[in-house]
Amino acid sequence: MLNQEDLRFDTGQRDGDTVGEIAYRRIRSHIVNGHLKPGAKLKLDHMKQVYDASVTTLREILNRLAVEELVAAEGQRGFRVAGVSDDELAALAELRILLETHALRLSIARGDLDWEARVVAAHYKLSVLEARLMTKEPATVEQWVASDWGFHYATISACDLPVLARTHASVFDRFARYHMLTLDFRGKPAADEHAELRDLVIGRRADAAVDLLSRHIRSGVRHIMSSGGFG
Image (cartoon, rainbow, N blue to C red; front, side):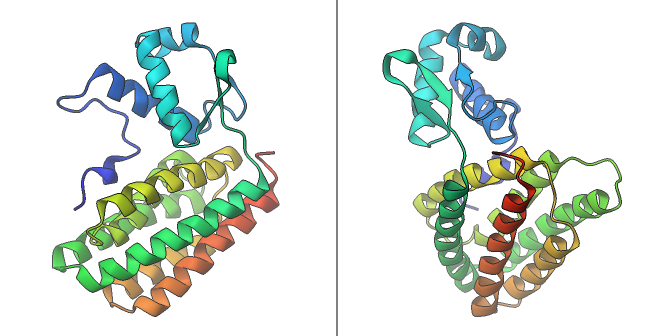
């Protein structure tokens, strides 16, 4: 595995964590999960109490998130949560496709048996949550987004290019935020595509897997835009 990117949506404390790292993961998660709404003013005095971090640390975190384009810096006026738009969603989708399909081809070429097992395990977890969402059993879109990340990350985790993986993860964060703002799951078509992608990946059918992945991401964009829930 490349690192701990499979734990990207886990905000719990880990061994060796600093206060800043814990606060960074929590703030990023709250932005991606829609708890901090697009355009919301990020008031340092309030955040200091919520995230148990100093103003200096919070400024460093918000500047870091500004580089990731989850936060907008406003000079002397402070920071706001980055806005959203149809144009940005479409652009993020195409960038995700560019990065993820390249990483997927590399993983299919380089992955071993352990990698195949990770893909199957990650899909099983995702499929359980998708089944619950489709049958109205207790499950949340937030859980689904985390498991969706876990599956897609597993498929590319053998690419052996950490810089590519980190860049893709940052783009995925921004893309996933739109899912969380609409709070809607596409249903059986998405679940069926995930199952087919699993089979194509472990079957080493790179061209078919890349084609399906591209169609899967673009279908997700159309679903989000049709919901009209984030504007």
